[in-house]
Length: 107
Ligand code: 2BA
Image (cartoon, rainbow, N blue to C red; front, side):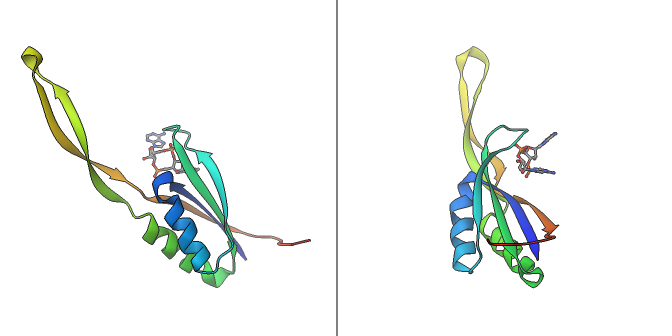
Protein backbone atom coordinates (compact mmCIF):
# COMPACT_ATOMS: atom_id res chain seq x y z
CA UNK A 1 0.00 0.00 0.00
CA UNK A 2 1.08 3.59 -0.69
CA UNK A 3 0.20 6.99 0.66
CA UNK A 4 -0.06 9.72 -1.96
CA UNK A 5 0.37 13.25 -0.57
CA UNK A 6 -0.40 15.98 -3.07
CA UNK A 7 -0.11 19.74 -2.52
CA UNK A 8 -2.67 21.33 -4.85
CA UNK A 9 -3.47 25.00 -5.44
CA UNK A 10 -6.72 26.14 -3.82
CA UNK A 11 -8.28 26.98 -7.21
CA UNK A 12 -8.06 23.34 -8.30
CA UNK A 13 -8.72 21.55 -5.01
CA UNK A 14 -12.49 21.24 -5.51
CA UNK A 15 -12.09 19.55 -8.90
CA UNK A 16 -9.33 17.26 -7.60
CA UNK A 17 -11.45 16.18 -4.61
CA UNK A 18 -14.49 15.55 -6.80
CA UNK A 19 -12.54 13.55 -9.40
CA UNK A 20 -10.73 11.39 -6.82
CA UNK A 21 -13.98 10.64 -5.02
CA UNK A 22 -15.69 9.83 -8.33
CA UNK A 23 -12.78 7.51 -9.11
CA UNK A 24 -13.55 5.55 -5.94
CA UNK A 25 -10.61 6.75 -3.85
CA UNK A 26 -10.79 7.56 -0.14
CA UNK A 27 -9.47 11.10 0.29
CA UNK A 28 -8.54 13.35 3.21
CA UNK A 29 -8.22 17.08 2.49
CA UNK A 30 -6.06 19.30 4.67
CA UNK A 31 -6.09 23.09 4.51
CA UNK A 32 -2.39 23.97 4.24
CA UNK A 33 -0.18 26.99 3.60
CA UNK A 34 2.87 27.18 1.35
CA UNK A 35 5.99 28.18 3.26
CA UNK A 36 7.33 30.41 0.49
CA UNK A 37 4.31 32.36 -0.78
CA UNK A 38 2.41 31.91 2.50
CA UNK A 39 -0.80 31.52 0.53
CA UNK A 40 -3.38 28.81 1.05
CA UNK A 41 -3.20 25.49 -0.73
CA UNK A 42 -4.74 22.08 -0.14
CA UNK A 43 -2.92 18.86 0.73
CA UNK A 44 -4.64 15.62 -0.23
CA UNK A 45 -3.86 12.33 1.52
CA UNK A 46 -4.86 9.24 -0.42
CA UNK A 47 -4.10 5.72 0.83
CA UNK A 48 -4.32 3.23 -2.02
CA UNK A 49 -3.01 -0.02 -3.49
CA UNK A 50 0.38 0.12 -5.22
CA UNK A 51 -1.15 -0.59 -8.63
CA UNK A 52 -3.56 2.36 -8.35
CA UNK A 53 -0.98 5.05 -7.56
CA UNK A 54 -0.57 6.03 -11.22
CA UNK A 55 -4.34 6.40 -11.54
CA UNK A 56 -4.38 8.78 -8.54
CA UNK A 57 -1.52 10.82 -10.00
CA UNK A 58 -3.21 10.96 -13.42
CA UNK A 59 -6.43 12.29 -11.87
CA UNK A 60 -4.58 14.95 -9.86
CA UNK A 61 -2.47 15.96 -12.86
CA UNK A 62 -5.51 16.24 -15.14
CA UNK A 63 -7.46 18.39 -12.69
CA UNK A 64 -4.60 20.70 -11.68
CA UNK A 65 -2.58 21.05 -14.85
CA UNK A 66 -0.02 23.87 -15.01
CA UNK A 67 -1.37 26.49 -17.42
CA UNK A 68 -0.92 30.17 -18.20
CA UNK A 69 -3.42 32.90 -17.48
CA UNK A 70 -3.53 36.56 -18.50
CA UNK A 71 -3.86 38.98 -15.58
CA UNK A 72 -4.29 42.76 -15.77
CA UNK A 73 -1.14 44.76 -15.02
CA UNK A 74 -0.68 48.52 -14.72
CA UNK A 75 2.63 50.33 -15.04
CA UNK A 76 3.16 54.01 -14.17
CA UNK A 77 5.10 55.85 -16.85
CA UNK A 78 6.53 59.40 -17.08
CA UNK A 79 4.26 62.45 -16.72
CA UNK A 80 1.64 60.52 -14.77
CA UNK A 81 0.71 58.31 -17.71
CA UNK A 82 -0.44 54.77 -17.08
CA UNK A 83 0.02 51.81 -19.33
CA UNK A 84 -2.30 48.85 -18.79
CA UNK A 85 -1.43 45.56 -20.42
CA UNK A 86 -2.08 41.95 -19.49
CA UNK A 87 0.75 39.76 -18.24
CA UNK A 88 0.90 36.00 -18.69
CA UNK A 89 1.40 34.12 -15.40
CA UNK A 90 1.68 30.39 -14.71
CA UNK A 91 -0.99 28.96 -12.40
CA UNK A 92 -1.93 25.49 -11.22
CA UNK A 93 0.24 22.41 -10.93
CA UNK A 94 0.69 20.06 -8.00
CA UNK A 95 3.56 18.69 -5.91
CA UNK A 96 3.13 14.98 -5.28
CA UNK A 97 4.88 12.62 -2.84
CA UNK A 98 4.38 8.84 -2.80
CA UNK A 99 5.27 7.07 0.46
CA UNK A 100 5.34 3.41 1.46
CA UNK A 101 2.74 2.49 4.08
CA UNK A 102 4.22 0.17 6.70
CA UNK A 103 0.91 -0.67 8.33
CA UNK A 104 -2.73 0.26 7.70
CA UNK A 105 -5.46 -0.38 10.23
CA UNK A 106 -9.05 0.69 10.71
CA UNK A 107 -10.06 -0.10 14.28
P1 2BA B 1 5.76 24.84 -6.39
O1 2BA B 1 7.15 24.27 -6.43
O2 2BA B 1 4.80 24.37 -7.43
O3 2BA B 1 5.17 24.48 -4.94
C1 2BA B 1 3.81 24.74 -4.60
C2 2BA B 1 3.59 24.40 -3.14
O4 2BA B 1 3.83 22.99 -2.96
C3 2BA B 1 4.54 25.09 -2.18
O5 2BA B 1 4.02 26.36 -1.84
C4 2BA B 1 4.54 24.13 -0.98
O6 2BA B 1 3.37 24.31 -0.20
C5 2BA B 1 4.44 22.77 -1.66
N1 2BA B 1 5.76 22.17 -1.89
C6 2BA B 1 6.51 22.27 -3.01
N2 2BA B 1 7.64 21.55 -2.88
C7 2BA B 1 7.61 21.00 -1.66
C8 2BA B 1 8.51 20.16 -0.92
N3 2BA B 1 9.69 19.74 -1.44
N4 2BA B 1 8.15 19.80 0.34
C9 2BA B 1 6.98 20.20 0.87
N5 2BA B 1 6.09 21.00 0.24
C10 2BA B 1 6.40 21.39 -1.01
P2 2BA B 1 5.07 27.55 -1.54
O7 2BA B 1 6.11 27.09 -0.57
O8 2BA B 1 4.25 28.74 -1.14
O9 2BA B 1 5.80 27.83 -2.95
C11 2BA B 1 5.11 28.40 -4.03
C12 2BA B 1 6.02 28.49 -5.25
O10 2BA B 1 7.10 29.38 -4.96
C13 2BA B 1 6.67 27.16 -5.62
O11 2BA B 1 5.80 26.43 -6.47
C14 2BA B 1 7.95 27.59 -6.30
O12 2BA B 1 7.70 27.95 -7.64
C15 2BA B 1 8.31 28.87 -5.54
N6 2BA B 1 9.26 28.63 -4.47
C16 2BA B 1 9.09 27.87 -3.36
N7 2BA B 1 10.17 27.90 -2.55
C17 2BA B 1 11.05 28.71 -3.16
C18 2BA B 1 12.39 29.15 -2.82
N8 2BA B 1 12.99 28.78 -1.69
N9 2BA B 1 12.99 29.99 -3.70
C19 2BA B 1 12.39 30.39 -4.85
N10 2BA B 1 11.14 30.01 -5.22
C20 2BA B 1 10.48 29.17 -4.39
